[in-house]
Length: 321
Image 1: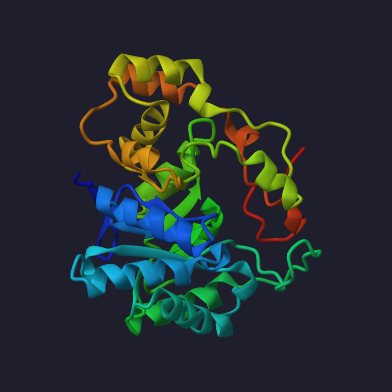
Image 2: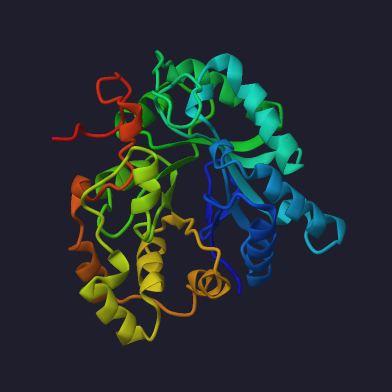
């Protein structure tokens, strides 16, 4: 299967469907899952320092490269600077570490993972937040492009105000925003702002992240409202109409709006159907019906409650009521 691409502001092509790797932390599962994804046709891999799996991805990719099954330039790799390294003197150190784990000389896209800096702590320990200077960090991100360690740079979880400040104070403009975007949290205004300013938008949790409740609870981020978008009656009706899965409806809804998706799954059949998005189209009536299901901030899944950061001047989300 052939995947469509979008073009980043540096002229680089980015496959519009990516392999979301968060949560895959064992070598056997990564090898099985990533091998299946690559065989299906995925060529965009999304990871991060905090996923603790860059080394696993690097190991699998090296086997493909060594066997001549793929070349480095065939794969688009995104990774991210963690917020406990959101300091100018940490950018190069952490990107170098990511490159070593991934066993590559460059990444295609390097993102600032979250806009609020914190002290690195052990899991479940209280967070201590730090003053955050996005402009100073961005200058160091630009250096990584100039040195060839990243082809493009961008941000994740940033607000429009924060992105606009970077645009106005940069030599290399942000190429991409990765943000939580799904059927019930469509963020239309933010998406339109990014597109009008030349940023590609990537949706993480584009399926609404089914089964996330236990994961959030373990990390002190429990949320009362976690609807199942895959079971939404409108989504089910559209899926039946086109003889596709409800996940395909949700993913196609995003990519028809020119939004990149990085769904997560370790199940071979879902990896295949989540990638098989180019043999059908949703019609205008489908798009309108799905757009009308937006519930706004109430449906945000990742509120990062464990940071206790709503009073930080760089907190990117509306305060909870």
